[in-house]
Image (cartoon, rainbow over all chains, first blue to last red; front, side):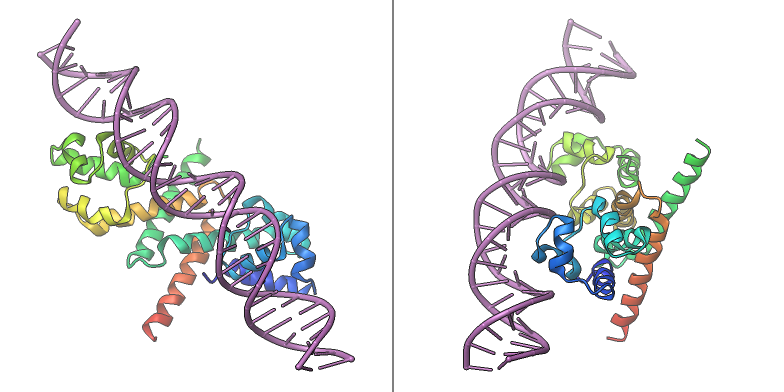
Length: 103
Length: 103
DNA sequence: CTTATATTTGCCAATATTTGACAAGTCAAT
DNA sequence: ATTGACTTGTCAAATATTGGCAAATATAAG
């Protein structure tokens, strides 16, 4: 339920001295939803990340990484083999990247 | 859509000379479903992994790792920052583990 | 204590996604 | 052409996620 993405967004929003009430409409949602997003009980839509990054004058990729990391964490958080699974997935990613590069 | 879990299950099933038709009922599903699971278009339920491992005389943890890895991969597969996200998630996992150990 | 403002929470209907079941399909061997 | 193994498509039912609103809380000010 805790979310690195959400925490970072809150941090950035506060640094910009913005209220939920001000930011939420720019993302076409109400303050309650944005509050939940910062609290980690709801997910921001993938394609809103760049929008939010711009509002908060933040780096879109930084936010994306946190947003993805939260979801990765969610998959394995209760598993004893979490780290092994991450390693395995990483391996797959790396080898797919190699194949893509060499088409 | 391709799945390491599914491929491994098929491999193990064939090694045991079992047909879908034989294995599926033990998992309380039809052959079509199990076929899709091996093909990676459907997910086996988390709690059926040990059941399947036993049927295939395989290591339940090995299968669990693949099952999780598929899902991790799914989260980030199209993202440029996939590896960074994995690193971030791994960091979170490690630091949470530290905290848990020290309660 | 009351009001005002910001945020949080709970609820529920709307929407989206996943699943289970079955029928029909392909493919290879005979 | 028939059989057996597997695959694919479809669709309704079951689940999960979302959006929106209202009520609850928190904090600060008067």
